[in-house]
Image (cartoon, rainbow, N blue to C red; front, side, top):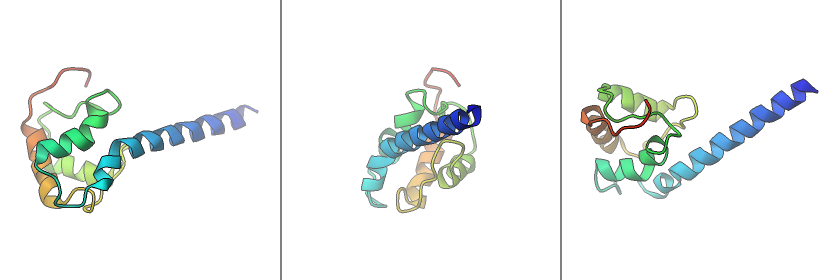
Length: 110
């Protein structure tokens, strides 16, 4: 019985993560590559949905290398889904990564 409860908890957790990721990235999927105004627009429409409300870790003000941000976005990490070039093209992703690598901390937990 305990095994079934654990399996149910894992399934519910996976569904919840999927719903959060789907809701957070819905706007991104509606945008075609090249449709973003600038790096801040991408951040506010995609990244901030999780990273500014405590769902994902704080990503501003961490002085991380732009290549690190790009790798995580393209390949995903833990609960964060991977974003395809059709979601955010490489050139715009590079701009977002550079913006984040130079950004000051916004406050909140790291």
